Length: 391
Image 1 (tube, rainbow, N blue to C red):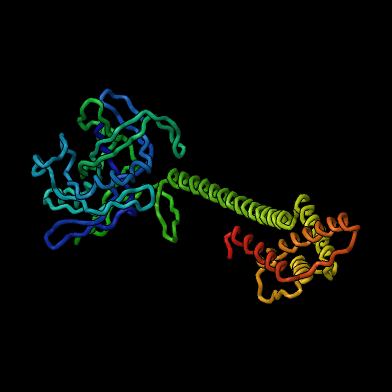
Image 2 (cartoon, rainbow, N blue to C red):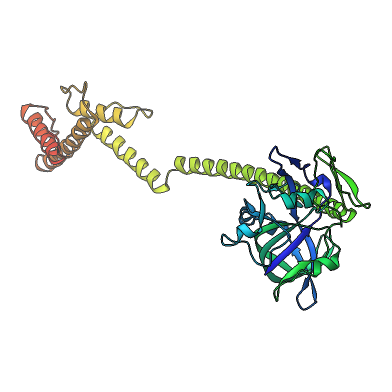
């Protein structure tokens, strides 16, 4: 839908317009604002439409306002490249700005002599010509009920219009379905002008009140100030709630981290206990091996002590069976192989002794560690090492 909104912002919302050496007038003006506004439709009905900050200050909407033409009154058609010479009396700047989240301002220059004369004589309201998608949405915004909402606001031009009463504004001819703003913030001028004959002109409404924002005093209607203060109070309350929630989250995170550290400590201790714990079968296996080793030492008549290590006992067994052997520098594998040889020799010797006792009336036989016995033991040891992949 096409919309024509008159904005009659108080003078504090704009810079003073000044004349250039060429006679143009230029300055910064407020061209539109947020709020709930009544629009009179072509059938005479009135609908209340919300111009929400999210829509008014939406980036694509702001971009559509850049460098748009200024007209003297609204033309009866959209301004295009085909008709701009007929309607353009100036143009907007490239710097739309959301100054206070209520009003939208932008630089402006007017170059047409007739329009400049009209402005100097008091024609100082601004009215935006734009299109918007008017969607069904109802609610209350800042205490003001509405039934429609303007979305996708796209500007075509900004017109300089007379300070008009609502009835006069409503008589602007519109196509079917179009709307015109019939009431705005006040009935005062939107444009403050300064030239050689006068200072900053334009009246502020008698019911304006002052509010200080960031150490700067601003004038606004009481309803606007009340709405701002209510929103600010709500925002402050939400901020306090967020801070409280952040504190609770930080506390929960600290408790979680502490619990995790305790769990890690318990798991580490459990791992240490498991690492130090020997399976009962393994213990039995080691005890049995020790018993067998001590029994072999006894058969070899080796001198051993209870606190000796297994390897020391094995060395004692080898030296008892093979007295001429030197074990200096020998590896554990070598000693284990010699122990196996000694076990076999002891068993063989025991078998011979048992046979001799039966055959010869139990005559004692003394084992001689001769050349043949030593050679046989050596050959057996070599054979074992070869079978294990060692020489």
